[in-house]
Length: 389
Image 1 (cartoon, rainbow, N blue to C red):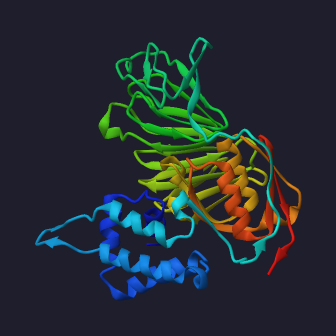
Image 2 (cartoon, rainbow, N blue to C red; image 1 turned 180 degrees about the horizontal axis):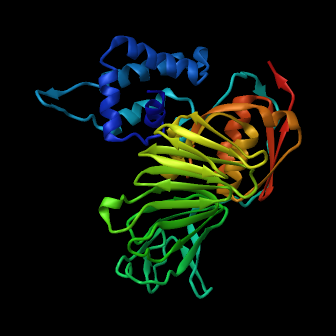
Image 3 (cartoon, rainbow, N blue to C red; image 1 turned 90 degrees about the vertical axis):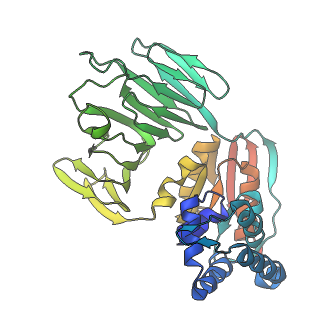
């Protein structure tokens, strides 16, 4: 339920999840849990915000009413909930929140020489079979022999599946970019920043559907065998092969990292790495360490692993160092830590990808109280500062 509440605050909750939240809140104990979650998990300053929180919480509870017919639950207007949920969280009004156990106050003023940062957007480079390059970006339409793009996604046709020769395309997403591709079999793939995918322009009937995540992060929603005349779907990336029958999963395999994370959302996949095989169930993640060739399976919060494709970064007890790596790819920035100990500070929370980086850094600084920052062109320096407790 914590995941659903987080999605409520970041305005990414679905109608199905909203109904589930409504049912859950019928129990008065759960209403107390929600209030405690708002107060404690988000580490709000109760003495300062108490009146606003109490008032907003009452309005939220008044808004979450259960209007039922004998066989149907009428969904609540999500805008009503969002209006008051934003008042509960100290930072939701700007689209994100960062959390810590440190309530000190920063005494240093950020130094901003020149802010050239831009929020990431839909853009990619398409490499065709003959080696020619096509730039794809939001606002521009492009047509090739096998596909069409509106600048936000590229869609491949499925009328050449009986051909015997396979022609491959590459889709490369730069830092500060993202893109969506629909393959010729109907499989959808969302590609994160700094990612490259290799795939055939059309799959051959009766043969395995094989694609390669060369590097980066991708979310797959695979078209099942029953929907077409093809065989199993396989994803290759460094050190492993994933066999799929029809499912949704996420792979994170950046070229500058030695660990590959494969997370299953729905269905079933088998991870095969150098003779080791592991079958994942929904909610599980395989962790492949390329340094020592170990493969482990752990339970994870699926939403925090995949929310990036829905426009939200969700950080679950993540180190500041890892958070900044993620943000550096999206905002196309270089990040340096003047003091190594602050790299290990941890946060819980989420932010909308559409927010500007300066607002985010200001929030980190004011939340921790031990962090300040400098901005110079496309470089950010994070440093430890003196605090007043």
